[in-house]
Amino acid sequence: MPEECGVFGAFDLDGGSVAGKLYYGLYALQHRGQESCGIAISEGTHFQFQKGMGLVPDFFSNQSVFDKLGNGNQGVGHVRYSAGGGGGMQNVQPFVVHTHCGALALASNGSIVNIDVLRAKLEAEGHIMHTTTDPEIIATMIAGFGAKDMPQAVVETMMGVRGSYALVIGTEKQLIGVRDPAGIRPLAIGRAGNCWMLASESSAFDAVDAQFVRDVRPGEVVVIDQTGVRSLYLPVEASSHLCVFEFVYFARTDSYIDGISVYKAREDAGRMLAKVAPVEADLVCGVPDSATAAGIGYALGSGIPFGEGFSKNRYVGRTFIKPSQSMREEGVRVKLSALRQNVEGKRVVMVDDSIVRGTTSKKIVEMLRAAGAKEVHVRISSPPVRFPCYLGIDTPTTGELIGSNHSVNEIACVLGADSLAYLSLEQLLETVGSKNQTGFCKGCFDGKYPMDIKECRSYCPKNQRQ
Image (cartoon, rainbow, N blue to C red; front, top):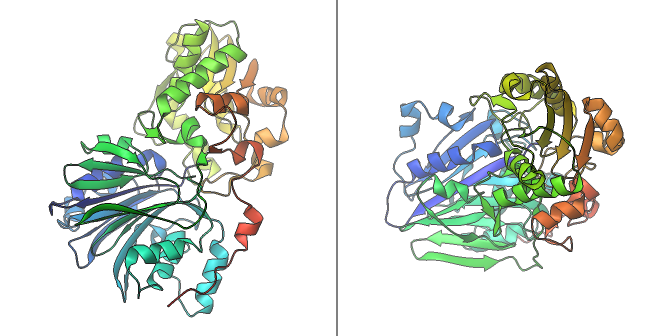
């Protein structure tokens, strides 16, 4: 279940260049998408942009590529995993377009559920689409409200959109951030002096020596320009249904999302696991990096020593964020190797964040066995993933989800583990401070989504264009 994207935007009210901030901000968000990256920067009249396949430091390592961005004081950036719309250069963001109401650069994180209906509507009106991604549809809709001011055009556009999204939009005079009314995808505001920023995670602000100001609220439209920062709100009911998988896997451990520490949530999940699924063992290890905090929590809660069970190749990206299963499997072998020195002859508790297809987990258990582990007990700091996600995460079909088709004991046999235990959904929610199961989207665990997916897919907005 790869996350789809990370977004970053900056507007320097003092006129300073934002190119460096966008580069390092995206670098800090690289974990959210590793297929492609891009930056678009404006000096107030048009956008200079560079985008391509690969990682941020690789694509922008050519100084001449970076220099072409110029010294504009506002811009947006993006790192992408092709969760929707497919890969390829034509779909690399930010999406930059020149319209009758000015230049526009848009970067998106999320998934528009009624995108097929919106696309068909625009094509019926005579628009020619050049990509297969959400941002082009949104940008085209925004341009249709050109007689109105841009923030209001954004508000009216998003009234016709159903799904999850966190957007950063650059215009000739403004930087605009939008978070969906359900608050499913995260978006935060940061500041360094008179340079204001928007980012998918607060940890991106640390990378550019900026201060986290606050999270963008569900349904909020943040407008940053020379007059400062102001907010509009989508005229719909807003409520918080943040994707709980941000705390399980996606976000960096040093991030805070909607006031919750990602690290603490993961460590608490490990402590909870030790309480509800104890086992006699000699060593606890977390699968790096997303399960390290949970592994530490399990060790603290159980009293079993924590140690490194794996050596990680730091030059390989997250195997979860790969476009094909074969590449994921190859990535596991290159990325991790078991530390024989630490695991040989020992009963090992292997803590991981989730099991999706099961193929990766099976290979990791095999690594520990091959390195001489006497027993391997798998502990998962989230519930079984049983349902697909329609709101911005590239989940497999139900048929591919091992948790949807097998019991816990059956999964343990598939993995080759001596035992296997998960957190329940109630226990996971307790680690993020929700005892009544509200405030989070947890559809991949229980099949209950914060919106009617079938109804949203068929939603067609009225023609509101002026």
